Image (cartoon, rainbow over all chains, first blue to last red; front, top):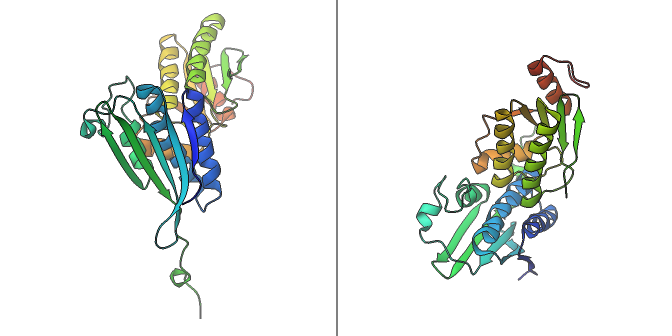
Length: 146
Length: 124
C-alpha cells in the first residue's frame, strides 16, 4: 500500500489544490501531459461536486500498480453529503440538480480509465477514478531493417 | 486572485495569470461586464494561455462572458486554449461552438480588428 495523499475539500480553493497535487503525483509516473490534464479535469469535476452538493469531504490520491506492474493514479472523492438519489440519471449528460451543465459525472467518466460511484440517499457519495500510465511499447512491435 | 484587465483602445484584454478558483471566475465575469460598460468597449479578449485545465465550470463561465458581452454589443474572443486543454474539453463534452476563439493574443486582436473594422495594435 502506497502512502495516501489526503486533501480536505472545504472550499473552491481546495478543488484547485486537489488537482494540482494529482498533477504533481502524475508527473512522477509515465503519464503523458494530455493524460495528466484529463485526470486533473476529472478531479476538478468530482471535487466540485463535493463543495457544491455536500459542502465538505475529501479527495485521496495514491499510486497503484496492476498485476503487470503498470502504474496508475487512483483518486477517491468522498463525502457524507445527501448522496445521489438516481445514479443512472446523474450519469446522463445534461442532467443536473445543481444548476450546472450536468457534465460533471458523465464527463469525468469519459476522462479516466476506470470510474466507479458508490452512493445512497442520505449517506454520501464516493467516486473512485483510475488513470493508468501508458504501457511502454514492446520492442517486438517496432519495425527494423535487416 | 483577481485577473488583471487592460484597456487597449476599444478592446479589453483579460489576461489570466494563475489557476482560478470558482470564486475568481465569477469575479472575472463581473469585472469584465463592469469594464465593458465603463469603457464602452467593443471587443474583449480573454487570454487563457496559462490555464492548465478548463473544467465545465470555467468553460461555462467563459461562454457566459461571451454571451453577456454580445448582448452589450461587444465581441469576446477566447485565446490561448492549450492543446491538452482542448482535448479534455472535447472529452468532457463541452459545447463551445458559439464562442469565438483564436490561437493567441495576436490572432485574437487581428480577428477583432477585422470585425470592428478598426486597426488594433498588435493586430492585422
